[in-house]
Length: 260
Image 1 (cartoon, rainbow, N blue to C red):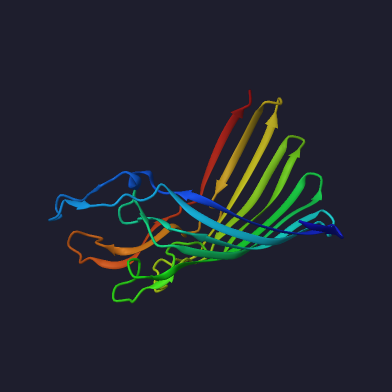
Image 2 (cartoon, rainbow, N blue to C red):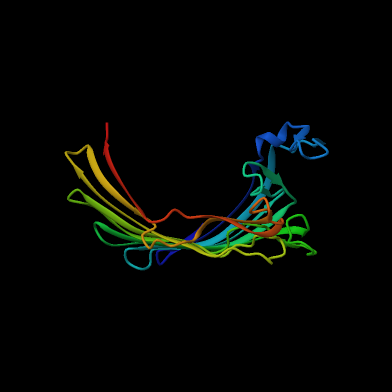
């Protein structure tokens, strides 16, 4: 770290680490396949349990503006193998080739009043395979280097009322930008934006009554998107398409909690 100068400091860091693979793939030697497949057992090579990664970042932190804490950074991450969820099977993962990720982050926390705070966090990143990937591409495509389902732009923001004579509340936004669903970028998801609210009251020190308002705007966005060959009805022809799970509609949840 360098500083602080005028309530501002610069920092840099780097390191080596790892991520864990799916435990099922580390011991298997035979991969079970549907009985309708003419080859019910396919030889499978176990994958390593731990995948090395390395990365670093450079950033700036400041409290030069009164009541505001702000941090901005740029970062890079290299992974020896990219682990992806398989949307087609629903419960399996695939270990893919190496990837490189880089991006920027901007975090802000503002407290203008004793019981009121605002926060705004923005991040944008890019995830690319180190070589052209044909397995996760659209049909008849030469493939590309984009990591499918990797999130790009993300926003998390909100305003919070803290413990004002027992009352507390919050209003929050979560935004996920469009994502590449195939390595060639021909299939992309739509953005997802959800607004949630919460209101609570603490009484007799240990009791709290609260209400949550989820998907306040009742948006019809998607929780998750995939792109693969699917057959919607038994009589339909299989087709390569976008497959998604919708977000839950607007709902209210009430809770009564007691602390011990």
